[in-house]
Image (cartoon, rainbow, N blue to C red; front, side, top):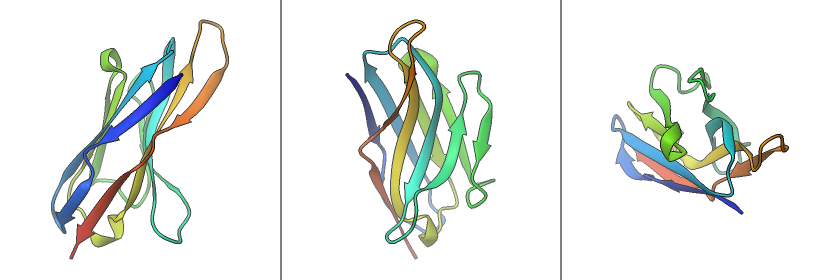
Length: 121
């Protein structure tokens, strides 16, 4: 079994910062792309940022210049540093990882349970 456990969400004032973490554990042979997505009430889930195993990153337009994604491959952990937060950043943030459970096995997409980020004005 594979688990993704997120932490670091909370309530912050506009202009503030938060750092989210997501640790993958369980039956893991290899981890490919890891990323963060978010979903606000009555809105579709959207990309925040993704990072490949080699460190290539891509960001959603709404967070470019304000967020930095990074990962520690030794710890199977991905981070999201969010700065200059705005009320419109309020959402549940979900971690995602593409994981191979065994050598030459298929890749599966796993999701964390989500962590709430609330930005007050």
